[in-house]
Image (cartoon, rainbow, N blue to C red; front, side):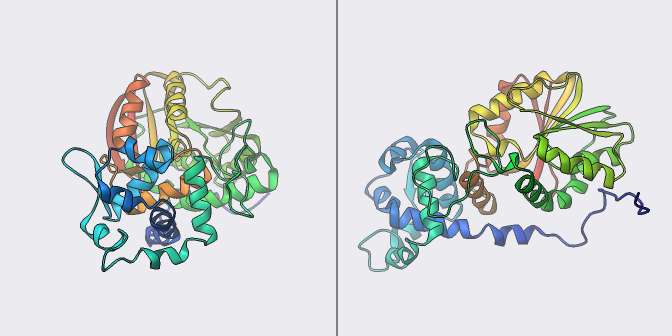
Length: 359
């Protein structure tokens, strides 16, 4: 048995790592811009006449989710605007520099990256609306890996293999360890006794919350291979008696009942809207009256025009999962559809925040 004292999940970093995540995701801006210019000729299409979102989607031949990912990023870059009729149109800069035939056109320069592997991979994702490696995906760039971050019965998932599940779970915990102290300090549990951490991974958010709230106990619900890591974390942080784990499929298996809080931390962004609605209905069903769902995630502007770092994170999610980033307005509508009353949005750290829904 180790003689080391248990670790604290409430210790915050002395420096803000947000900029590291912004640099890391910056490549998605290049890929989306190049795809829009060189593969979809989006600015030439919009230069002819402003188009409603559905009209543009039809012209590009892509589904609704990829259109939101693409146009949100382009709006955040200041290249696409919405006119008084609610239609999409090129900005002045895009008309001058990204519309073919103009004296200051730079589209051919941007197109020098058109055949790069990252751009081709992004184009394949936009055209197929499938995560990398999904069943039936015949558009992935050479060497593309399987869909890693989500579990679905018909989808190859690295979270079902011990070595890859361990690697990815620990990798995803890199951000979580920096954010967990802020979550525990910013959001009041209000004397809650029972928390369900749905898709909780290492359980680091539960660990921080129980360390900050002595009356709280937590259950981490995730895939079996992931929970091997969660149990190690609970032991390392000295909370094994208060942070337990349960394996299962969050879409199909029974969930605990009479919970005070159901935490969905960076979970909903892995799924398209129908699946998000299902998860929120199931989370609401696990709550006692007066209980709360905490959506801990990143949030796009309600107008879906940025912020750019979140728009690029949305592109990353889009390529690896079946989801994208959502706005607080979109989440509030989903909470209301699940019979929950939306509350305030509380910032935590590294672009994240908690949106609450009360039963």
